[in-house]
Image (cartoon, rainbow, N blue to C red; front, top):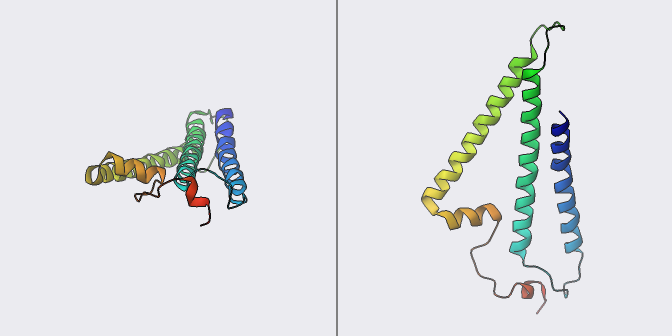
Amino acid sequence: MCYAFALFNCGFIVPTVTLALLKWASLRSPEAHFACPHIWSMFLSVAVYLSVIAVVAAICLLNVTIIYLNFDSLQYNVGPRPAGYFALICAAITGLFTFCALILHYMVNGWNTLFSALTGRQKENHGQCFNAYVPK
């Protein structure tokens, strides 16, 4: 359960820090040279994926804890173990659907398009990255 708490913290801290960095970057003057929009998009995508993975792992750890805790001395109308199994099965089904969607996307579009879609890269070439923020 301690690791679940730590993972929930990571799932909260990563998007909060990402939001703070993006807010800071958005408040810079238009003349300031800064990273390309696709780099920020990739940064945001990776942060969201890490956050989701941390929260899902924390939830799974809590459900495994529910399944393996000793509840013999307590009396329940409905035992907590079936709820733990149900949540783990739902997480597994969701993970399987996500994996199948990624595999189908890869089979139709290839690795480069899949990686670009996952990281938020845009297809069109914008030339020099810093020039995208400089008014003309």
